[in-house]
Amino acid sequence: VSNGRDSPLLRICNNQSESLRSCEFKLNRNNSRPCGRDESYTSSSNQMTLITRTGAGTILDQLRFKVYYEFIDTKQDGLELRKPCNRLITQSGNFHSPKNTFFYGRGGKRNSKCVYQFMPGTISLDFNLLDSQTCATSFNRQTHRYECASSLNYATNSQIPHRMTGKIRYYKVYNNETRIQVSCFCTNVKGSLRFTSKYSQQVEIVLENMESWVDSSHFYFNGRYFISHFPNLFT
Image (cartoon, rainbow, N blue to C red; front, side, top):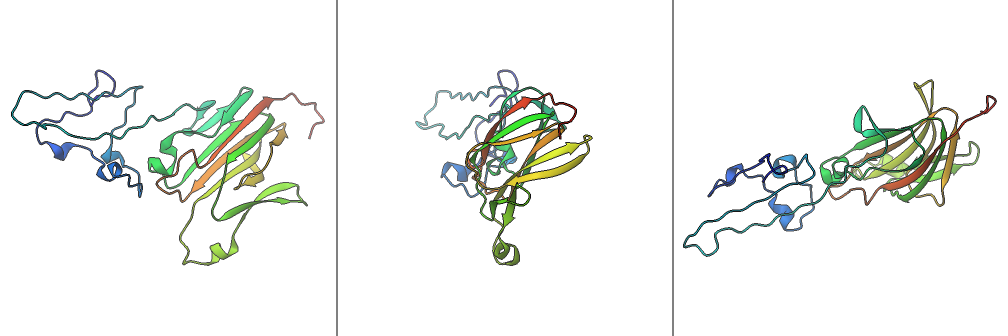
C-alpha cells in the first residue's frame, strides 16, 4: 500500500499479519463504530495504490482479502481560520457545510464545531438536512428571532442516554471581538432565511453526541453570501 506512487505506507510478506491495520467488523457491514486510525490507512495525496504480487507455488488460493474504501471530500469554501473546519469567507458566492468525513461521527468524531466567518454583507441560508433528536426550532414573536428549544423532559431525566443534536447559530460580531447570538436553528425551517449586517458575521455549526454512522448526509445546509456597502446611517 503506497501513498501515491513513491511513498509506501505498508509492505506485508507471508504471515506478517501483526503489522497489518485491519477493520474486520466493517467487512461484515457492522456500523456499530467507525474504523479507527489504527485500523485503516489514510492517504495525504490525491491517490492511494494497492499492489499484490504472488509467485508460482503449489497452493491454489494463495491470497484472499477484501478492501473497503471511500473518497474523502476535503474541499471547503473560503480560507482556513486557525483550524481546518473554521473558514473565512471574503468573496460573494455560494457556500455549504463541510463534507469531510473526519468532521463527523463516521470519521471518529463524537462532537464537532465549525465556524464560518463573513465580512459585512447579506447571508442567505437554506436548510436541507437539519434534524435533532432533543431540540426543536421555534420563532420568538417578541424578539423576531429563531431559537433552539430543548426538551425539558429529556434534560431532567438522567436515565435517557445522550442523543444527537445539531445546531446552527448565527452571530453578529462587533469590533471583531464581541459575539451576539441572533438566531439558532436545530430543525429544518422552510424557505430561505436572510441576514444583513454592517458588522462581521458568523455561522456556527455545532454537532453533539454523533453516532458512528453520521456524516454530512445527515446534517447539511447551503447558503449564499453577498458583500454589501452600507450608508453611514444603516443600523
